[in-house]
Length: 252
Image (tube, rainbow, N blue to C red):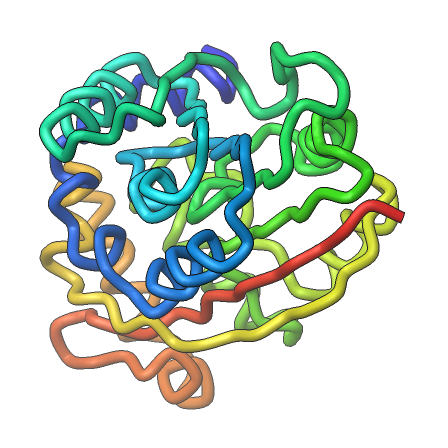
């Protein structure tokens, strides 16, 4: 099974839990996205890898059209049902992969992606596609988990992520993101980070991680060096903290 199909399957099985997840449904980043959309009033917005649709819901009241785009048909069904319940007539759904966007050149004022890019098969290819469909005056907003620059911490993070979720590809370092943007024809204009606390039990349950893999995640964290445990603020039950980033870029 290729990476795109694996992601579609994994997230199709857990769509409702991502709609209800506090980590995904709330956050200062969503508030900021909502405020920015209310101020800028972009006409057309593309939400790539929309997941349960929270970024799309944030901008929907202030735009003419937002397309929630994802590889998972069950996830999109959840988004469409919730959008209808909220009365978001501007929101449409469409299925597909980030690496092949089925839209004409220069169609969107904004492209947004939130907590999705670490599942993409090729970030470089996806960003080239984003650049193609984005207007020359457009705005790209990427919100995602980022890896530490230090190799030891990076390795531990990727290890627990792939154990928890087989569809995980990589949480990229900020330095890697800078190269991705440059290679796809973007100028990085802003980057801010913050910590997200994760409760181990709900983090594992959200992806229905098998118990054997869950035990392996605990083992990686609880047997790691003290400096690793301190960096991720690991608790006795396996709960920990990860770093997220808000990155804005414009075509150059």
